[in-house]
Length: 330
Ligand code: GDP
Ligand code: MG
Image (cartoon, rainbow, N blue to C red):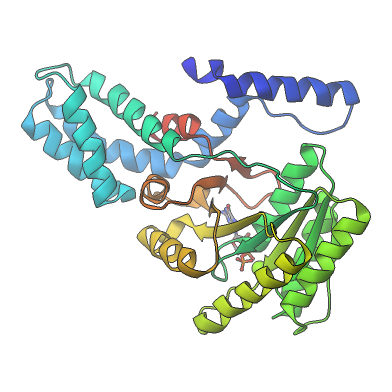
């Protein structure tokens, strides 16, 4: 399959060889393993799209009616109006009239992969310590994502520190501390209700002193008081900038895929003020609405960098358009 011949596979295998030489106990997933796991996790979305697409197979050849059905199938799969239009435009350009219907699925996959690739940026590490601020509405999966990210970076041989700047609830700090233990990351906390920006400051300083490669900072996400929340996130960024003008190096917005179009609306709101540089789409395993990943990728100027596909520490993947599209379109 073409999927496994791409440049990133080679890089990945080279990485894997280095790890094996070092004889770490890290579990190395192959590209095929990532694809198999993602296909399983996205089965609800896959079934949803498959059921919707089913209607176009009632005709053998592609004509105006099949294209209408295709449009409806894509639109009702959470791919969004604008993105569905873009896909249809490309399909019309590339399809030959009367072509066999079977070819259309392969064509759609190619079109969507190309569209997603144009807007996809791989996660980079640009400084030491590389500061990642994690933001988003409560319940979206920020704290869980931080645990998974700590594990992800540990597997890449990085030294990781986690800072608990969601000081709103004691339980939130404890939950994060548990993830730090599980992933083997250092942990910085202060008391409940202490100033989040001060925790961010301490986390930066501790990361610098301990030689951390990555500092992950958790934040609160109370919705009922949006302006305060945005001010607080800006204050955290300001304090970090005083320590290092290029920090935070990444602001990851965690969105809950199960909310469909609402996730896209949240992305638009947050990106207005909090300097978001990347999106993590969580809970793709539990939803039939995974098509929203395509809408978010296309409608936002911010790349989707990671996807969450379960509650366990290893249930996070870098967003890879080809693996993703082949997982949901079969
Ligand atoms: P926060 O309030 O944004 O920090 O959200 P949490 O990290 O506390 O997560 C809220 C809930 O979502 C928890 O029950 C998590 O286990 C769950 N969760 C987070 N990410 C995922 C995911 O990718 N898949 C599934 N199924 N559940 C997730
Ligand atoms: Mg949390």
